[in-house]
Amino acid sequence: MNIVLFGASGVIGRAILEEALRRKHQVTAAVRQPDKIEVNHDWLSVVHADILDPASVSAVARGHNAAISAYGPPRGNERELLEVARSLVEGLTEAGLTRLLVVGGAGSLRTESGELLMNIPAFPEEVRPLAAAHAEAYEIYRESELEYTYASPAAVIQPGLRTGQFRIGLDRLVIDENGDSIISIEDYAVAIIDEIEEGHFSRARFTVGY
View 1 (spheres, one colour):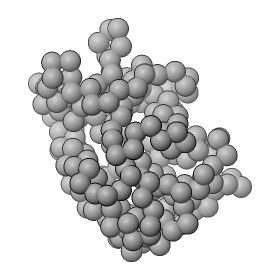
View 2: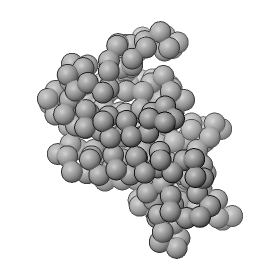
View 3: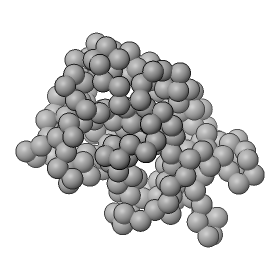
View 4: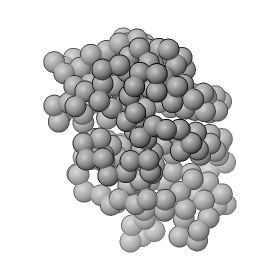
């Protein structure tokens, strides 16, 4: 496939980039600072783009089969996620590219009690603004006409091993036998590219965990 990847210079974006290249997909890394992409590969093109500018999004998206947004806002600018969502919807629509996979948040997933994860007392207070922004951005994608997929990670996503072994959920947090919800960044990237290839969750959300 020919994929345009926004946010490729971030930790999760880099893992997605590496997984896509591993599977021989053609990738255009669309980033604000191209010099931050240190990967050299025959199937990789690195271009400058501003994800907050719909015209810039449209220009780089043309000619691709799918777009992935792994964009993460700096702390204090969490609500930029809403601007990004609007820009992607407008820019991709203008480019005629309808397939979008979004790296989302876990905060709006339901826990075993039925509460949203971000509303439980144990949820870290400093992460609430980001979780709330992710949840609002998700609604923007849902209201669009894009063939979006919103990929929520487990409650804890951290560097680890690429095992290819994990479980898939929909709107409910995936927890293990100990009650923990964890996924490695590497396996989350596997799930992202699996979905790009297989397309099981068009206009829907899914989540992953061990």
